[in-house]
Image 1 (cartoon, helix red, strand yellow):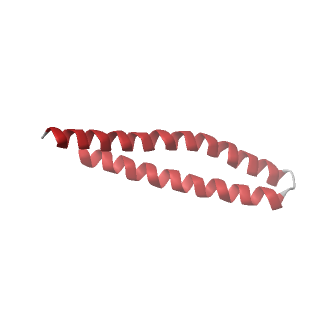
Image 2 (cartoon, one colour):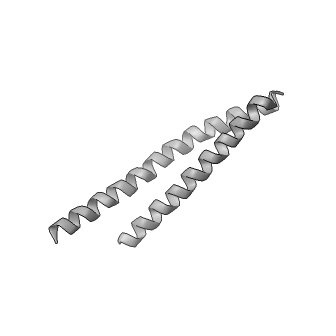
Image 3 (cartoon, helix red, strand yellow):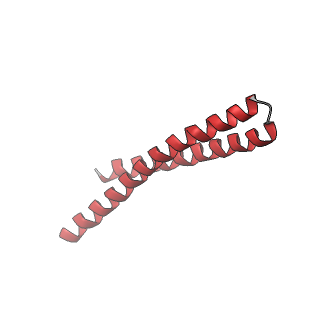
Length: 77
């Protein structure tokens, strides 16, 4: 029983770490998206559009992994 509790505790900490990392990535993603929008607005679409797409992809990844981590946390309770 003690080994099972340790395993569950380590899994829980792993999922909490993923959620914390994703929060930091979302803050960085806001900067990426704002840079892409600013460059697109200023007439540098050739640079701004790929940066915007990068921001959208990062946003999708972090959202999906956060949802999966939260789902796993709920299943453990």
